[in-house]
Amino acid sequence: MFWPYFKLGWQHILTLGALDHILFVIVLCCAFRIKMWRQLALLITAFTVGHTISLFIAAAFKPTLPTQWIETGIVLSIMLTGVYNILWNKGTKSNVGLTSALAVVFGLLHGLGFSSKILPLLRDSKDLIWTVLSFNIGVEVGQLVVFAIYAFITFLVIEVLNREQRDWKFWLSGTAFGAGLVLLVSLWQ
Image (tube, rainbow, N blue to C red; front, side, top):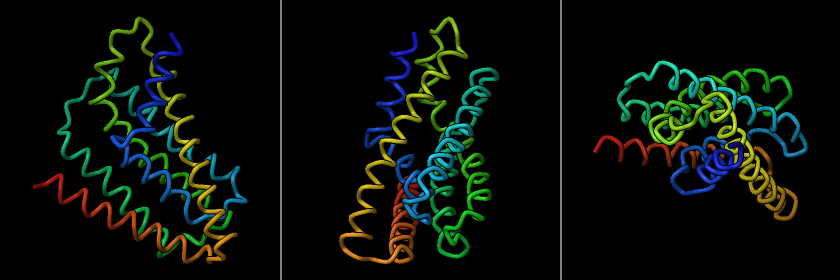
């Protein structure tokens, strides 16, 4: 039963319905140079660990949390990561630890967002642990595909168009913050 849930996780990330997730992956990585790809892959995995934990908690305890508040927390995680990048994250190896911790914490929120949409599909499984893991492995692969596309575009911007990493970080972080504002307003209208 690995492949159906793996495919569900993979497909979930690579749709516009996962725009908040895609934005978070990009803003999580944009402060760092692409040559730090190993550390960036670990950041993405830290994010996956966070939402895996919250999916397990949601599957085990079935909390009833207001979706609008969870979605608000997810949008705020994007905005706060953008602010963190602009004000404090210098994109050095010394920033990877704190950024990884943020990725796990914010992954918990994103996992709660997944839970309201995904758990009803996963509850039919006879082995919930294997099902949640299969789904999250698919999510991880989808996130790494998003990262690969982001890395290619970043390479073009920095190496071909000769833009500064700092400017690219500011632009992406500011864009993520602005997109977060739009999402926030749309959530509360």
